[in-house]
Image 1 (cartoon, rainbow, N blue to C red):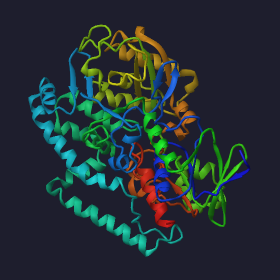
Image 2 (image 1 turned 90 degrees about the horizontal axis):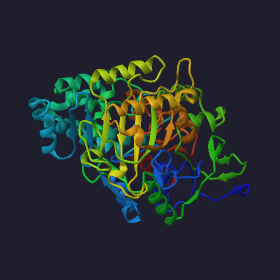
Image 3 (image 1 turned 135 degrees about the vertical axis):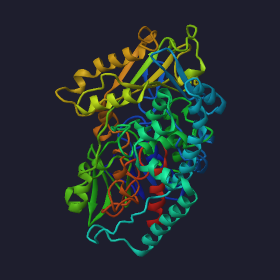
Image 4 (image 1 turned 45 degrees about the vertical axis):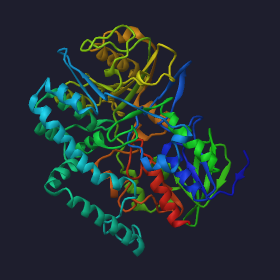
Length: 544
């Protein structure tokens, strides 16, 4: 690689889905873009890897729904290989007493299944979903534009011009106008956005099976309790997104999650974007308060007047930048970002699908309940206890498991007759008390498999291969600080105008020409693409 390469209009750090989206939009506007990816595979945490011969494993992220439809259309991703396979039914919860709850987009199925537990809940569920859909309709437009910076911060923190103040004011006014459309539902909307999931679910429903099934949405990927303020916000994801083919329908990417990155890369290269794999960045270069490009770990440099960072705020500001290039107040705010996490991923290659005692199947049979997420979380108290274990610095004695089997609808990712089971585990705290993840991860994985076997006894004997990714592994492999899959906790104080820090929610940074384009920026984690699209819009606003 030459000592210096260019000229480029922009360098993007990281070929995760947000970085690739950002690069595509910049290139569509005529910019010459170079993407630098640390690993040999694209997609960041939304990737596909052949972990074992013949198995194409979605090693980290495993489902898609929130990805913005306008990105799919703008970039012609379907025409370039992206295919999303809907999961119908979408949710299955087996219970210790042999009963089970199967749910999905089919309203009659939900009514019938919920009615087995409570006629009252069966009647209430459509009203609950309708409320969530109304609130989501207010929230969704804010995802596809940069967040405003409305706080009256001192000028020493950031000088904001009148043009931006006018744009921010217009965004806030649109939110105000849209909130008015909720009418009497406004207090309920505020509670969904700021409150705790448990009291909301207990108010709506009496069945523990339904409460627990819905509550798992509130804590996925978060080191928080269902009783913690702010946990209710993620309940809205149940009805958001259309990438699965309809509102709220989550799907699998054919060929594994890396199929999204492959289609984005195909479009990027058609637009002239240069994508370089195995090119880890060591430093972001600056002079006179502006970026000049980046230096790679091999010592070579890539010059550009714009750098869009798809990695988290800790890596961007505390590893890649000289501390002297940032104001003290900003550096202090970045240092205070919460990366608490408690997620682990287990990927299993199976000789046959799980055979649940609650819904027995013939050997090798793929049934409808295998299509969606298979929850091991029978009650709200079960979820609470799992969290309390982790708060003491140990993995949950009774872990929460969310298992998905993409091979139930995708025959391209495993040998004929074989299956892939993706198990997302909580809680597995990144910081352990008196232990190290490298020493205990396999034992904890054994405990998770044993817990799953309480509901599907054939699973242990069906395992042919196993991959275990502890929170520490997630940090090492995917470059996610603290193993946090959202590039920073999705607490209320780290969302919208406070992401990554107050005063800098519009993807810009105190260093001229340096932008954030990953999940460290608004709207945060999840396979949305919005962070990359919104960042590109702000870059082009500055550099048309």
